[in-house]
Image (cartoon, rainbow, N blue to C red; front, top):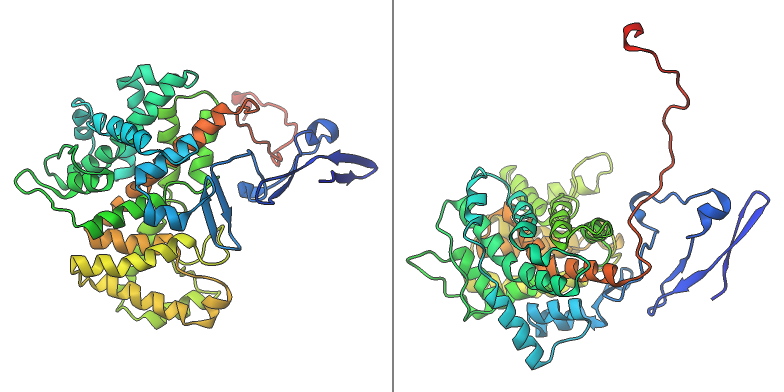
Length: 427
């Protein structure tokens, strides 16, 4: 590729260009400030590639999502969550032997330290599960100091196993604490998705029998959330890790970033919107009109996407699972009926079709989670459970890159200039 040429006044600078394996192009501005004293200004980093990555590829215009070259459609319908976790972290799909070894390590480490019960007890029962989850993960550096060194490969491997193994137990126990019910311990005879559902919904006197359809849906949801390139939380994980903070501290930071309603909280926002619509009478056409009115602050949650300018490929996969789950569970929920009615109305409206404002993964995942019996404020924790392997893969890739530098964005200062100081007695 040819170099790019930048002209600023009489100064001309040649900047190298890069091209990824899928044709993505970038201008390398690493020398810009040194050579010209200028920086770039890019709010939200929407046009800035901070890293080269081989983990996830997204083509928003084409509605394409691939992990390590594998289509999300294949992974979500044909692979277990732990297969996908292994793929993200190790770069290749596991063999039968490799998967069995990985699964055994996850099962072996699934229990939480008993002392962690005291941490849960320190929270009010009404605490948001994401706050509990982030706090719990950050304590792993204290419970497992041998796995906290980010520069020790064996420690990082150990930390990887601990995080993936204990994350479902942590999320399930946060749920149980909120519900004021006894904690349920993991079972080694169940797969990752079924074991998680067991820990959430079983009780000491009644164990949950997970149907194969619900188990598959839970596995699919986890896979669909496993990684999504350099989003807000993944970038947070990388920038915290760039300081050589432990992987546990970095994952806790990622959880905090995910907790925001503009990121991981979007599926919770969908159900809250549906509840508000239901409380107001449930007239879908009224809210469709409000969404189309530029002067109305109402926003139709769960439609459109920052990256995908076409269908979100994950939503297409989930759409087919919604009917199966609702049928198996026999759910007749007014909010779920309202969601289906809203989806049909939007997909039949030229305003949304022309602007490619299609239902995204948050819209459908919220419907399925509610049908399974999860309270709305648990949705973001379920997102974090699925995203953990992706964060780990992003963190490990960042650490393995010898060109990584501590994250330190620049700014354009717009404050006061040189001001004389006045002693306090004279102010």
